[in-house]
Length: 125
Image (cartoon, rainbow, N blue to C red; front, side):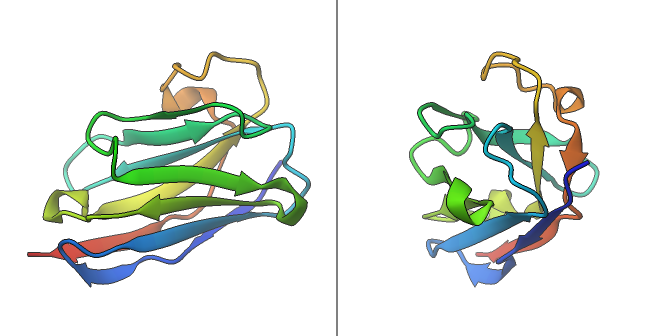
């Protein structure tokens, strides 16, 4: 089991940026890393994912062109750079990992094995 800890959330104004981090308790270079978010009263939404070696990334439609996922396997840490934030980006953001070789386009949260506790991002207008 991989323990994940997110950090970097906060309260920001629309149009600004935040970078979230996801620190893993073990070497996670063999895992796909994903970011999800959940706003009050809504289902968990896929945000982005990156392959184990960082060669491929994929994004949800609502964040394309604004968010960038990356990872540093030497530090066992993943990142989500969020630019031009909007009030509708307000949510709890979760990172997650999976070891099974699903296609990167498989957004189903149930395919992810381990999850962090989440970090709150609030964007004011």
